[in-house]
Every structure is written in C-alpha cells, then in structure tokens.
Length: 104
Image (cartoon, rainbow, N blue to C red; front, side, top):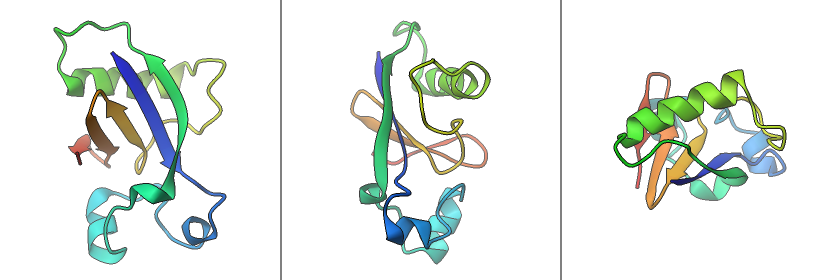
C-alpha cells in the first residue's frame, strides 16, 4: 500500500505565525478555524510492507513507530507527530494526540 506523509509547511508565514504545529484536532477546529490542507506539504512517499489483511489504523500505527524509531535515510521531515497527516490510498488521516482522525 502506498502512503504519503504531509507536515505543516513552515516556509509559509501564515503557518509559522500560527500555533498549528503539534496541535491536536480539537484545538484546530475550536481555535484555529479548522483544518486547512493548503498549510501542508508532502515530505515523504513510500510503500508499506504490510498487506491488505491489516486495517488502516494498524498500518498508521506501524508507520508512526517507523517514523519515530527508525526513519528511512531519505526522510527529511521531523518525527511523525501530532498535526501531521498521512494519506493511505484515498483516505486522509490526521495524527491526533491519541490515535488517528480520518478526515477524508
């Protein structure tokens, strides 16, 4: 399964001047006017070694561990963390403070 990791684009002044980085979903909705995918940039694309018998949450948890404990050498983002987004196939998931929030 192909996955893509997106992190907030700190080259954008509007992102740098906000408190979005490492904030949970509830905070974004309540205090920042909601989620805006335009604030993100893709930082990695890869293929999982897990097959389709695993559900998406299991795959996301596996990716979270991988991108915190053993980054691929060609990964140049920060460790996968709260406020990051992972896309699996056509579904988008927000890394929340506890677990994942499907957003598309």
